[in-house]
Amino acid sequence: MRILIYGILYAPELTGVGKYTGEMAAWMVQQGHEVDAIMPMPYYPEWKVRSDYKNKGWFTEVVDGVKVHRCPVYVPKKVTASGRMLLDFSFLMSSFFYWIRLFFSKRYDVVICVAPPFHIGFFPVLYSMVRNVPVWLHIQDLQVDIAKEMGMIKSEKFLNVLFKAERFILKRCKVVSTISEGMIRKVTEKKSTQLDCVMFPNWVDEGFVKPLPVHESLRDELGLTETDKVILYSGSIGEKQGLELIVEAAKHFAHKPEMKFLIFGSGGGKGRLEVLVQQYKLTNVFFYPLQPYEKLSALLATADIHLVLQKKSASDLVLPSKLTGILAAGGCALVSAVPGTTLHEVVASEQMGILIEPDSLEALIEGIDRAFRSDLTVYRKNARAYARRNLSKNEILQQFEAQMINIVNPVSEQLIVEQV
Image 1 (tube, rainbow, N blue to C red):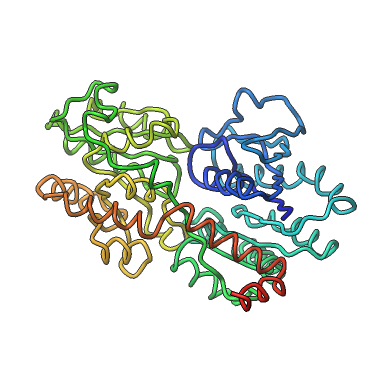
Image 2 (image 1 turned 180 degrees about the vertical axis):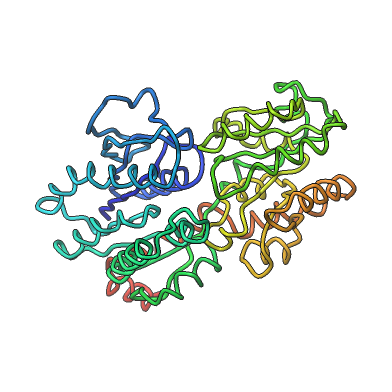
């Protein structure tokens, strides 16, 4: 098949949506498909264009066999709601350079549009109408709902315009997928999809990301001892997690020198955390850059406890992508989740982590205390078993490929099924 992928985050970005979209595209190439992508310059989670991509304008490169058409993009120095919107619209406008040619030249078999931002779905929808090509919209988080629930956009009139635009796109996509049962429920409530919203969860290469003994972790490299009690957060440092609580908890445990809080990552909220650490004069909080993928298992083996935090207002609007790696590495996750949400239900039913109330310093402190008083072996075994059973990269992508083939050529697919 000839596949076009359109989104705003892509490899070589190491976290979140970009990581998964890049892996999906590379996997499709390995299966023999011809894959193109239209993407901006890599900028996430540092919120600045990588130095080797600066001042390049429009150009094409090959990444893991995928022909990636890069576009210039505006990246705000300060991450605000208005800055994010300017970034999103700057990519929409700059990518038109490629779309205008595609409308009258190359015909793909399917277009995969990865949201957020939701409004980039306009060009795939227009292309679908002109060239009669199905669009698969994959939603990694519900951007407009998050903006509303977290108070990032306060104008009701503007929110209504955004929701109407979202419905316009949803109605014209052949398939809409998302990453959790809770998010499927949220999409279904919009009553704007042609077919039922389908599950396309994030995955992990459970053969590569695996449990390692402590002596193979990064503790020696980081100057930590085997007796240090390590609480680790790794990933994007943004608005949806409420990560100030980590610094506040570190302040509470400042009298215990063996309690070390490690924060790996970057993002719009990092500076605020660093200022808090300086104000409190804490010596038990350490900031590090994101580690390369090759070091992921060693990084995850460094921690006694992994923090998976998100604000109550983001419940079931986004599912933390970092959790897949933690589970595959057999880590014990301390998870803030609201009862009744997908995240809470999965962690509780599988007994693969410790659940706490979101947005509560007291709950976080109590959860850390409880974790260090507990035998974490059961959580770790259950986490690894769940990852192997439910998060296998090959199995998830094989199912996705089969569904995609079916929407591109349903008659042929039905004949194959009947012959089998």
